[in-house]
Structures are given as C-alpha cells and as structure tokens.
Length: 296
Image 1: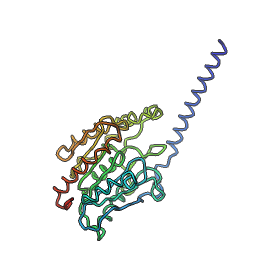
Image 2: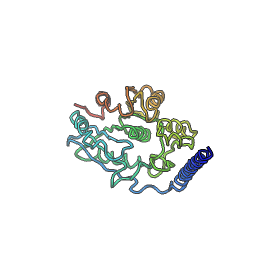
Image 3: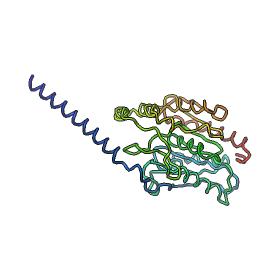
Image 4: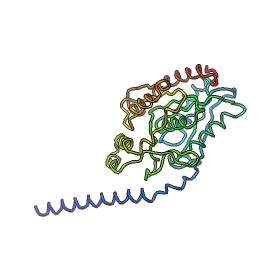
C-alpha cells in the first residue's frame, strides 16, 4: 500500500510540475513577444485577378480566413469565381498572410494597404470599376466588415460566419491585434488567462466567448453601424468556432435597414453551401446601385 501511495504521490508531483512548466512557458511567450515591431512583409499581399477587359464591371474583393494563402484562387473555389465572372463581376482574390511574399502569420494585417490594393486594381484602364464588393468567410468575414466600417467606398459586404469584434492575432502570444490601419493596430478583445483551460481543451467557441466578455471588447467591437452599404451575413446555427449567429444578430440590430441575416443549419463551414444566396444578394446590389453597372 505504501508503494502505491508513493507512486501516486510521484505522479501528482509530476503533473504539478508539468502544469507549472506549461504556465511558465505561456508567461514567457506572452511577455517576450514583440508587440511593437510590425511583422516582416507587413502590408504586402498576393493578388490574383480574374477579370474580363470590359470597363465598368463591379469588382469582388474575395478574402479567405485563418487558413492563410489565397483560398479563393484555389481549385476548390475556381468554379465559383468563374460563375461570378459569368454573372458580370471581376474578382480579385487576395492572400494577406501565409505565402512567401506576405506576412507569415495573421498579425496586424494592414487594412489601409489592402484597401489601396483593391482601389489600384479598380483603377486599371482596362477595368475602370466604380463598384467594390467585399466578400469574406470566417476571419475573412471579420476583415470584410472591418474594411467596410473604415472605408465608405465599399458598395456591399458579404460576410460568411461573421464576427462583430476584432479578435487577437494568430500568434503564440495572442497579444496583438489581427488588424491595423497604416501601422496602427486596431483595438482587440484580448484572451484572458481564464480561457487557457478552454484553449488547451480545444474549445475555441468558449475561448471566443470569454474574449467577447472582456471589458476591452467594447472598444474592439467593429463599428458596423457606420457601414452605409448593404450587408449580407450568413451564419450557421451550430457554429462551433465562434457565436457567428448571435454576433450576426447584434450587427443586424445596429443597422436593421441595411443588414440581412441568413441563418443556416450546420457547423462553421456550412455557410459555403449557400453561395446561391450570395449571388442573389449581389444581383440586388447591382440593380439598386447605379455605380455598380449591371450584372448579367
């Protein structure tokens, strides 16, 4: 019996030691992370333009999420991009991190530089577009809404699995903002220490809920009420990543005349099965906004 108790004691001591080491490692990461220096290749993007040389076609700025790279330029999304082209839109797919010529991580991505990249594309002589549509999913939805809240020349927003709050950068420390404007980080909802057990368990939804409950979350809320353009939010009813539907409802409540919410069954990724609703929404936008020309 003494041997059993001794073994249990050593096991408990070992577990406590591992917990202390883990805590010390987290402290080291969070306190040693450089929050002042902007990441390498800050403000650089990988662009792919899918266009027809027909002046005046609306430009869709297509933004991926936390997976990084140029998602909308992948084989998976080629068919949808071609559908947009056939319906009268040009499409600019953009990687804002996770490629050799962009920042390595989703950290303080420059909204001002991204907006300028879109405008420069629109101003090309062969395009001469006067209509800009921001389309994004997940972190790309957060990005699309943040863009439209800061730049009033965006004519429509489609945000799939949206967020109403700026969340931390995707770094080990999570002590910087996801977004910045010309080098100045946007306020963000920090991850509290109380969320660490949820993070270890992989319960991302609980982590997000704790972040949104922090006092700093009020300043981090995306000012979607400033968006004058029509907005379509597609949110899953069983989203396991973050409370997309409740955040969508809050965005809608702040501007009910301009925001439309489509609640769909399924998980975080189920929203991509509803691109027909996106196409219908964009047809309405084109019909109602003179500068957007006419889709086919």
